Image 1 (cartoon, rainbow, N blue to C red):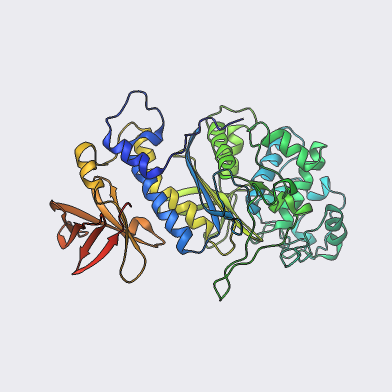
Image 2: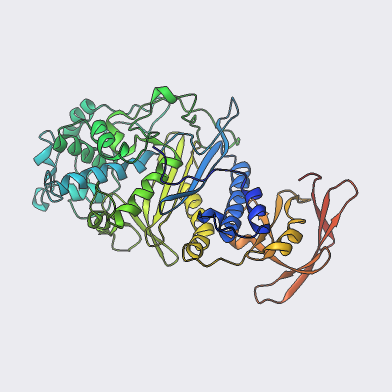
Length: 492
């Protein structure tokens, strides 16, 4: 089952040029066909390509969703560095703690069916829940506490499963055996304490309340109905060495990464075990937008709204959580979603329901700020998607102006290292210094004066120094600035 609408993927730069120089067609229906969106995707692609290469990231995949359309998805680097197998939108990665969202959805589905209540004590559903409790006067650990990380439980299940080289994630039986030797960390409803143990117990409750195994319930009630055929509740041996990207450590002081040995998440799967693709997480995001419109029978829209609302906030207001979902602010926008980090992988799913926009990022390298990648993708593309969804185009250059500006675009090698990407953005030529952690603030706007001469536009719209583009006999291009030049090689 495919995503409700998946674009054919061609080179983003070629797509941008095609759309910028061609008149709009009545047959163009996708938001990706909007010239402003195409420009934004081109900028995103240029930035992401450089970020992967300069950051030494083994491989990464990224997707952008608007409502029911997977607007764009692409892979960078390698799924398997040793064999130089390229990463693609269909590459599988461990999504680690994003798994918690599926556990939370399963729990709320069962709540709506009357099979559990958020204020049910955990012990009502798990008769083996007998952790040592020094705070009996504070009341029992309940299901809402599990989903909001306010249960008072310790972070982990009493086994050193984040420790290599074996990463000995426990089985269900081992979790049950170990629990009596563990102690409550805080009284319930006192502090936020992120807890893989808590969401593991939530998964156990899903299985107990439904009368099915956790995997069977999640597959029958979430994954299969959403067409998420590339998503599984644990690392699957069938995909190792092929679709499942090889996991790598963070870079050491010597700049090198190392392969993470095979492991299985086993009993911790409800908290950190899933593998998926950026395409499948796009389906999961589109499903949530359908639910919020009341167009899906799997979950009531008021239930999903409840999950997206803040249910726990630390006194400083910097840590806020819904039911399973992390809730946070960037600038003035509120987002929901979750990140993931486990041996060899980082991931992040970000949704802004008000805009019906979501981004998903996955990588097979530890030590990568996955949330930054998902957030930057949103910041670049969401404004253009908003305008296109309202039927108003942005400010891209069109027609003859675009063709003229495209002569100067491309990647220029700077004399002291790094690159300068020259691209069309919102009607003008811009220079983007690479690598950069913030592409939008690293853009230098140029104003065309004559022929190949431009001048930098300062923040107050005054004109600064000249940028002069000089085409050389061998077909290369020089970009002069401050009496020095960068070179775009011939044919690029």
